[in-house]
Image (cartoon, rainbow, N blue to C red; front, side, top):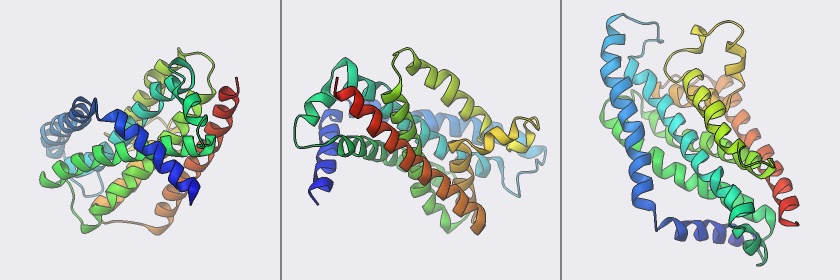
Length: 258
């Protein structure tokens, strides 16, 4: 019970800090995916639908909107666990102050990942509302795309927090976006089925967290939820959360002892 309270305290600390920048942050988090939804799902989707693409019976808007929901979760989680984590451990050393209180390192990292989950929830909720109003969801099960997207975001938060805590050089932070998030955004099934990728590249997409998040959200939004793949997607993302948090805790503990 005390441990849970300390985790909540870490989340509250982040929330109080966020109050200073929430408007600009939420505006960007809200508008960026909306622009993508409008440009790719509605405008480009009109042209794509005319060619009768093989999208499993979905319109292009129905195909791309759930994927953008998962991608939004990924991007929001990354914004919380790249530079902020590095700042807490090295630049501002605020994490050193936190662990000087009764909060322990596992509680600190769990709180950081939980705060990322809060931020992801806010971002994907706004996006899902607009997507739903635009007719992108064709099943009552679409309501479950929200927890699915949050699960995807938590997986990214844990993994990226582990990376941010482990690396020794600050220059790798930019590499997360250039060589990590951007390729994942483009080649994990967000805008087209991964079956369109070269044969040698398709298996790489299968092991990316975003592909699992995209497939999970897309299945729920369409109402076609096969049991086996759904369990696989959820299990994979949960495993990443557990492993990512464990690595982040260990790496952070080493740095906080210096």
